[in-house]
Amino acid sequence: MTIENLFRLDDDTAVVIGGTGELGGLMAEALGAFGAKVAILGRSEERGRARALKITEAGGQAGFYPADALSAESLQSAHDSICGDFGTPTILVNAAGGNRPDATLPPGADFCDLPIDAWRDVFDLNLVGGSLLPSQVFGRSMVAAGRGSIINIASMSGMIPLSRVVAYSAAKAAVINLTMFLAREWATQGVRVNAISPGFFPADQNRRLLFNDDGGYTERGGQIIAHTPMGRFGEASELAGIVVWLASQRASSFVTGQNFAVDGGFSSTTI
Image (cartoon, rainbow, N blue to C red; front, side, top):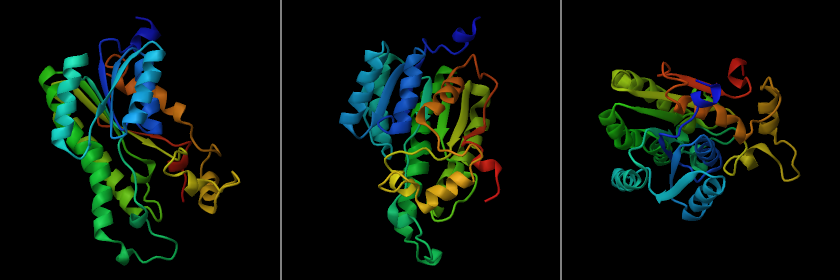
């Protein structure tokens, strides 16, 4: 077997929930480039179809399926359509997630004043929709088939509780814990479950937090760079290799229950 064949995904159907976003979309492209049939799930039809078109124009197979990650019925409907179009999913990437401004503590704010509704919404988005419900819906058919790889997108902040984003950090910590639980539950049934914890990757939702309008670092952006041994932010393309490796049954067949930080060394330093 050649190294290239070790990572080929020609017999796989990959579902990328949150594939309409920047990081999830890049992961979808990487899986398509290695031969997987890719189903992109999300709420933005425009972005989802554009990403699917990019994969097909590169010679891959892809389609967009509208879905709400917080609705089991919506996910099941997408699952059934994907099975009809591409076959039973064997790879699930849970890349849906995000934060809310009112769940973020401004400098000097009192934690005791954090709105509980904002906290719950962040947990629902990142834990329930970002891992739990999709793993239930798509994991069921993977267990039945005796084959699958579930890749949860957690966060480096789930490993190190960062200031201000307390709800997001706690929710991502829960994603890592759920990853380990599911890995243990399904280890003997052919389904592997792992997590990737990206560090700071500039994207639409956090760009203003990291950069000023003139392109320079904000105060917080500068603090992050100062604590990152590589001295820079990550680029979306730097997540491609690990998602393909974890997706491949041949390349990572004995890997489950693990959380992989891709953060330029941020989590290795003391804040």
